Image (cartoon, rainbow, N blue to C red; front, side, top):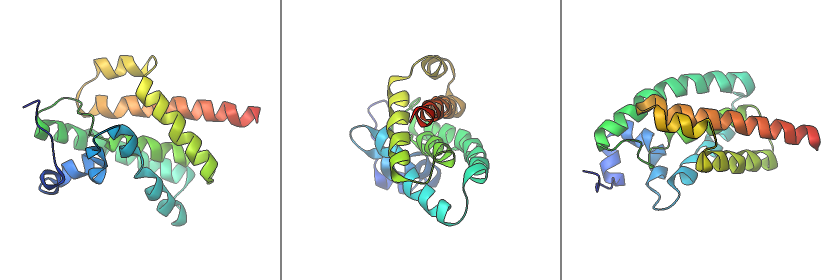
Length: 162
């Protein structure tokens, strides 16, 4: 079943998988992780306008992380494929977490997006170590959370230097 390619029709019949695929953004034929991170931006924008920022947004991300373990595990089982690249709930939650702690300005959001994507794509230690050793929903979610932490550290250093 490793040749299976999910479609939007397939996702619509499986609501949890639709969430796991970032509302379909994970179906992108190239760079699904990058495309899957994008929905976090308008979601964060709406949350900011609603006053859900900072630690409130971080608390929401903790809940979304917990749900993500379940959503990603379920999506993996439905696909029959381990750690499928189109499962992008983890990228969305990690990006939302980042945006909880960066200024509400497009330059910071762009920097957060770019640095996070670099950490997620290149997976330096310990991100790669976690990615190889933890499986299922927890493994899918945790490596991106660590990449978000690394991104926050880089952005914090950049803010101090600037």
